[in-house]
Amino acid sequence: MIGTAFSPVIENWRPFAISQEASFVRRNVEKCFTLFINHSVFVKEQHNLQVKQSFEGFKEVWLEKTKFSSNISDITNNSAYLSIIELGTDVVPFIIKDLRITDNHWFYALEAITMVNPISKDHQGKIALMKNDWLKWAESNFDIDEL
Amino acid sequence: MNYSDADFPNSSFDPFLVTSSQTTRYNCIAWACEDTEKWYWPDKKHMYYWPEEICRDETIECFIDLFKRIGYRICKNDRKEFWYTKVAIYCDDKKIPTHAARQLRNGYWTSKLGRNYDISHTLYSMSDGYYGNVEVFMKRRRFFTPKYFKKK
Image (cartoon, rainbow over all chains, first blue to last red; front, side, top):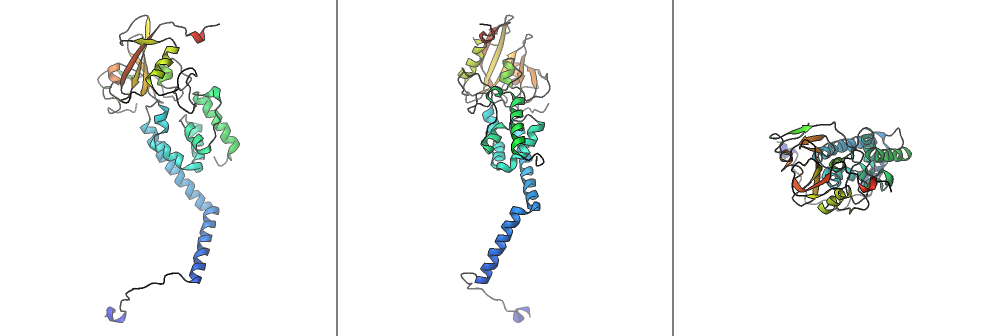
């Protein structure tokens, strides 16, 4: 019965382009979406949460895989460590937070992301002093509340 | 301590004892050099400590030079000798240095496990594990004062 009341429409052809009105609507929707992404606190928080979760996950793997290593090349070429670097500048606050409470080897990652190396020559290899150099740099380059 | 048999397969057959709390301040190379203030490694970005006059490569030659700088010279074996302190440099399959251990007066060896703990162990208990095996033994006379500590 249904078959006879609503006979199936077989689509053999579709318009090649969308109409002018549809195109106008699509452009505006895209514009609204972009503006929303850039300015929405909610989206920013969601993004930060995703970065944080990724950071925590990669950090755990990195620490486990390199737990006995003294070799800085091994420690900083670990795939999880490189993945943290790939998260980009958004991950820097999380690295700085971690550096405040641990002595983890974040110096290569921070240098790779920020293109800065605030460690003075006298402090090479002295983890506590290297860490202080980076924390001082972070204080003058980041909003403390953000951290 | 959080290590498995896969990390150090012989650690359950011979002494392998934790002797310190965890710290990242120094590594095994620094510990073998009796320095607890720095992390030694010949990294190319010059972030970590490595004496400037020593070649900055991850090769056994550079590590031997590091220990020569503080008075060690290559020796044949790990046999305990009263007048000498010995170090063992470990390498992986590719002959890249991975670790160093220092002999204690009682004949056991002391090591720092990366950013983890100091341990006392035998060469056997650490062999065939995370760090590979000993490539070179070096020794220096006890109570040795390196040249760079002597007043001019």
